[in-house]
Length: 289
Ligand code: SAM
Image 1 (cartoon, rainbow, N blue to C red):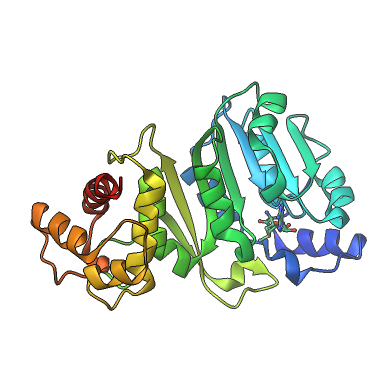
Image 2: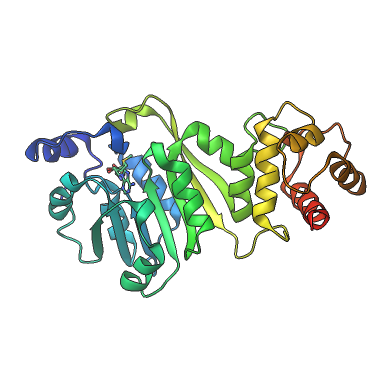
């Protein structure tokens, strides 16, 4: 099977099946072999690995994954792509293609059924309309995932990797960095896709921590504080948090906690690091009860 990373091969298969791109599924297929090689390298795939690919499209990246991994499970929502995948992946006996919506898929069950219960390496050129729910779902649900290597909008990759005090820093940076160590592996221009997306893209590798880097008594409460802090990011932290009406939290309890942590009360949420949010959460969570 000729590699689909070469544009002429992708065009030939799309014409053969008279495939029509579906905007609602975020379909932008990769047509650049060097980008495909960089994704495989960033994901550190070896013959022992079980890979979950979200949205295989016509199987362009799936072919590379099948060449490198022990097992590949690919979940594709678009029924029109299933017959194409049967043809493009026919040479590989280590690939299972399933039709379905990844947001409604029991991933633990997939790993048990097809991957011997192994922790999965997730690799995908993600549909951009559901990037955040997919990634946060993989972290928050109790899913056996070792790492996530994905193509996302460049702006989203920058936000995931951002540090306190920068313009890109926000609730997404903290949510991702609580679960994983992010590293942007490549920036990818629109001409590497068919059709071309309107925005630049980037490949980001998220290496999941065995345990989070900070100790938090109630992580859901910490994320409530984080969302409140960034919902009104121009406000000083005590005002932003009070404005969110979190049950049991008063301006006095916030000021007292900031004093104990030696954080100035004029600070804005965008300057607070993950360890500082964790400490603040632990203090306020206590004052809540
Ligand atoms: N992996 C292919 C490539 O790199 O050329 C295609 C990537 S394309 C950006 C995203 C793919 O995800 C499409 O094939 C699309 O149909 C599929 N997709 C969209 N929403 C999905 C969902 N909820 N569950 C599974 N697949 C989905």
